[in-house]
Length: 579
Image (cartoon, one colour):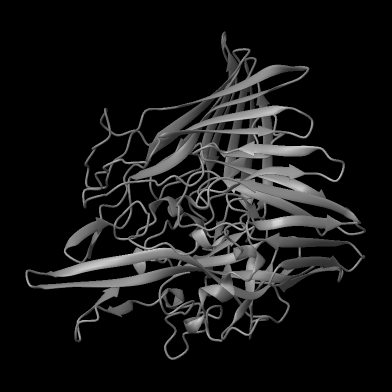
């Protein structure tokens, strides 16, 4: 079966996509921040790292740049005679689009994968004459990796509409369990590559590289990927599946001659079938309609069984973990995980799962902010030990400074390609309590919204010039606090940590200031080119840490990199202190 004719019923037989009938592809306009289908929030990918701040008993990780939060909990972890992970873990990502289907209702079974958003033609590229060269993109023509423009007939004569890829295609990304996704970019023609005889076409900012496999493992036409981790592990991403992601609708013409074209969007994923380390140890993934089996070369094995709601049970070493769901047909959630010893996790995600985000944006990037039924949400979790975690969140606008004021037409209306505003379901408060526990509290406070366009418009700025940084302060119940300051300037260290302070009610106790090398000075080269038409290009040229200055107790401690190697790694370092 070709990717072009893949049917949803086949997809839903895969464990990753096992859902109740009510959760199938939705109709109507896509639930995005723009009626045109521009997923502005996807542009946050790769801008900052997720961090476990404070007690992470509940697997919570927060982006200190945005306050966005996700939970990753490991239910099964089987150690072996090598470092390859034999685990079953699951992740709950807060906020986002309602059209994002999950493998455990609101949670996801963690598998590594490569993904991208595509239109009606499926996962194809713009390589002339060879659209299924999804991996072996010419290094000197990175834009050929893009999805093509999609012409959709209105069904009325020869009239139709072309959906341009900059409205729906955000490039490819690599997702790994427990971490945020990493944008994939086409390698620069002169970039350093492994010298193992393979041809490499893609890479990431943290030096994953990708060679190509000539075919898939599940009969889909076209190429697949082999990912090479910095530690030498190899991943066979060669099982291609598709997930429905709503539709895009174009209304055009006028008067009597009104036309409509509608195109379904699909997220395509390349799932792993094998992971192997440099010593030949391996893990294989075997997929069947209601089961995934992970088997290791040293005898470890985990079997994941699915039912109507998704993952139903996990079996390892003769022990079983069971998963229970509750709620209405259209709003069912994972509510309980029963461990082999009878203890259990319990969850109440309330209204926090996938509330609609964003609002209509005009060409000046003005937002009619309509976050949905509720602008706030609370998640409550109970640990098997009895500890209780409460996480209070609300939708928040975050600004970007000097964002490009570029607009493109979608039918008769123009939409901004980039945005100087991003909508995030951000953490406001975290509380851990329980029997025998003193209550622990973390309060999250954000600097006021500031955003501007490169035309000089300061729609959301109260000062001139518009601030190029924003900060998050986390305060604990004893009055101690940490403050993290980031660059929010588009294309200039956006999302990078600039300073970190620790203090209490008496003031600042310690401060760390960070500077980055902004030009290579010939020491290292550009990593590659992001083929996404409208995504950030921050990851194309390394910006390694150059100096770190710590000020504490009247003393200053300096770490400075004087020379970098060809991979932007420290080659010569100076460490000093004063007085």
